[in-house]
Length: 371
Image (cartoon, rainbow, N blue to C red; front, side, top):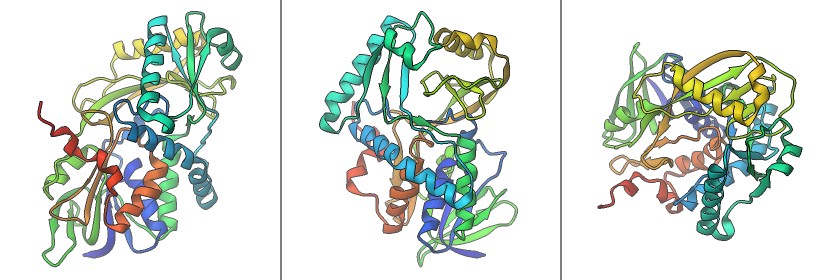
């Protein structure tokens, strides 16, 4: 049995961000990854590093997203310098495009409420009417009444981010164990934990981080932690490569560094079904070609579906075990946006042995309020 100072269970974007951040500060850190047959949320991530519109009724989450957006530039530069992998991060700001007047009015009302809730800590945004919008997004469709622009928004390549995090982790001396599905976590009476995996892998560790996506629910039960998450299916449409014309990411469409357009988003409550569905793909393309009609002339290269993490209110769940305080669990929907703070701030919490009280708002106790 190999002993680790800290074991991170889950090799997706969350687990890899934590493992990378923890490995920067030394010690023997292990990343235990079920493998590519696991439910990889990163596969279905649209790649937005997005602040705009986040945090309604929870201004702390708006501030948390903004903090990560500010940290993303040095974070991505550090990864590139260390691994040679560009995660294709750009921060030109982002546009939330509305397809009709009602959607435009609803979005403005939401942002106004967010501003009122957050006060001086609220993030900046601008209202862009159609005439001005065409200057920034020349391909915008005639039915679009306007958009809102947030200077803090950007986008990155989720798969290259995942690769860079795992390579950086190993360059820092981290121990990566793939194809190891955790079957049992057992607290040790003298402190720490034993981790049993199929295939015969066994680990001992002093600290434990559960970041296994949908697998976190069952793993949390081993330590008496209730982790309230469930799957929401998202589908993505990818076009053939085209001339680079879109300088800004939007809520419906973004263009990658390779010239492909990514079209989305969608959300379906279908349990653990990860198969694409024609009606949803049709709705995605209808919305996106309404926003940007020139996309009608491009061929669809591929489509896919993935099961994203969702909590009852859409905000992160950060949990420290009461019975075993050296065990933590982290789950969230915004694995790309929050990657920078997960690799820095949250990793420091684990090393310090405590989630700061100011982030108690992300504890699942918030769901235990009497009706």
